Length: 197
Image (cartoon, rainbow, N blue to C red; front, side, top):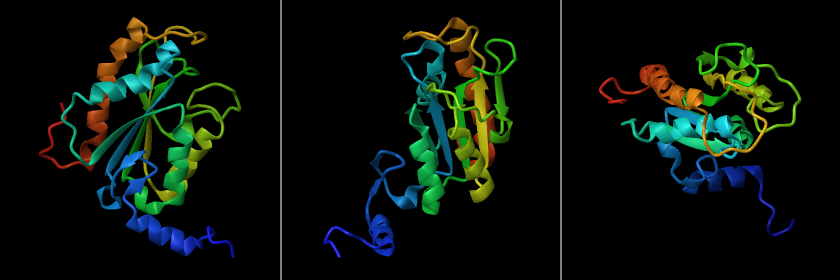
């Protein structure tokens, strides 16, 4: 056996001892696994696709309890979802994913909440949450692990087909309602005395 080869049991033991968690990409301990995780998806270089990260930035101004983790995942949500599927000790009690709704038919700026089963699993090549296999991973996470997943979406006013560093006025105005909706969604998972705004 090569010196660098480790058994799965030894890797898991070392994982428990380690204080570095891949899922948060920062120093953390497994004993501090959050009750709620909020992922903001999107590419901030593509205008309204930056809605998810913008919501995460705004939530930093809220007095969220320590049991709530907010993460700007950019376009890399898959590695986080795979961590949750493979490592039960990292799973939160509730997961919220924020993105733009490029395939919906609601009015521009509308913020809606849906389940992963409501999202189309199309094999398209873009930076969106809605591409395969992310939707399948969200569905599997919810169905196999029992972790409830809410997807919060905002409808952009025009198709996103070019670079831009700013959100459109319609999507920028949707950030605050999205934050308020998130506070309502997480309320059952946090201490009643927690101040959320």
